[in-house]
Length: 332
Image 1 (cartoon, rainbow, N blue to C red):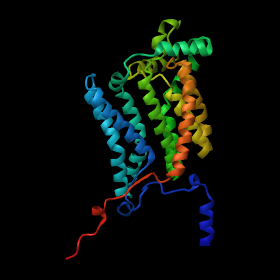
Image 2 (image 1 turned 90 degrees about the vertical axis):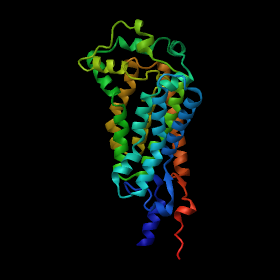
Image 3 (image 1 turned 180 degrees about the vertical axis):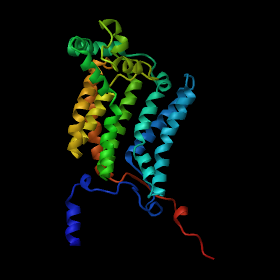
Image 4 (image 1 turned 120 degrees about the vertical axis):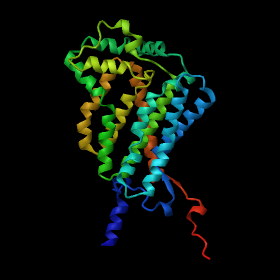
């Protein structure tokens, strides 16, 4: 019986092995400190941002607040994971450590302005708009606006605001089922994707067709009830130079791909929402067509990289405890 059980576990793929829902390291005093690769990625990129601001960005308005936010983003993952491993019975701590990427991405985006000013304050919209004309022969957002009805616009705008809902639905599903390795690979893919697109937001800052091509549209977005409020909300975000590439498109592709791999029921539930979200990036005038085109290969590359890293280090990065912590006190 025991031999059959061991054989069954050995022949299963790593992502099919269900681990405990919380408490990655059951005995941290013996195993040492372990960080998931997504946490390493998030902390590293936030640390780079802090050092760049300290060295080159002290002149920009909002410098101190930006440094403070990215310092918290850098420090929180190891601290939360250490607490979760120190108290393996605490489900709340493991949830906080495992889902930290979502608030980190949101708060990092909100305070991205000073960092963008320090790196590249010049807008690149003319080049992106020209790329659309050369690639499509017209501006996709202007072209599609003539076919939109108020109800369709309303529906797509709602889909657009479901961005983090997609992350949470799949993440909670994998986490709740105890599919820890699938969950960790999914979060790692998102962490790598955010690292790449945030770097490109710095290199290619752009505000999108809703501002740059505003005079070319015949009328504002015409919805039923929520559209004017949602559109106004997006116009008052703290940072709006986040056009190239389309983070909504790439993240939706990542969520749907991992849902297809690991949870088909969630995939079919999220497919209409994710499709509407991608369409809304153009219909809502947030992105150029080239932004969507660029997001696809980036998403595919980071998913391939996440899969390779997850196979190479399925348990994350192990940090051994120093000898003086683990050794027993001298007996007299």
